[in-house]
Length: 212
Picture 1 (cartoon, rainbow, N blue to C red):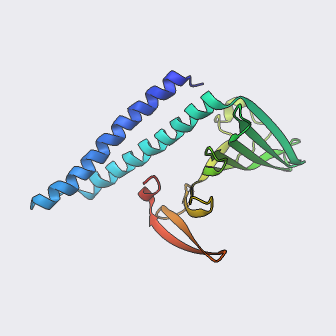
Picture 2: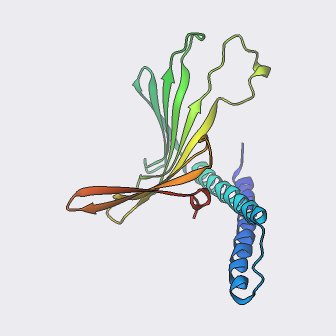
């Protein structure tokens, strides 16, 4: 379990690496404007982009871990139905900062319910979800030994960022599928509002645009 000092240290180290990579990439662009030699291998560029992605993801997770560790004072579990529950993590002002929705499923080889879709929502100060994770629950046979289970009870399927305008309307969503086949991509859902009507456009972007 992370303590606050460890979370801060990890986030700081990740930020230093992120700034270094960003500065390097920016330097390549600037130097290319003043030099005829703009050579940088695609492998090197892709490696830097991948490192930038990983560090950005680490910073995001460390930031939320820091906020949850320091702000959550109350946990409330609500059973919506027999096969689903919602767990709200709230601040001392009774504002939801983090929510976990769990759908349960019945399988033939197990007596108890298994976890199905798990949605983890992280909220801003206005109690609007701004970052979401969609997990698929893993179900193991009751005859399996503990050592056979690889310490995982779910796997991450999709992440999502949500953006709002000043009136609280959703203007953009970015989604990334971890388990998609072929070239991984980010889908941007942009919403425009006219006389109360919503118009949505979908754009396919490069994977590395997700954390921009």
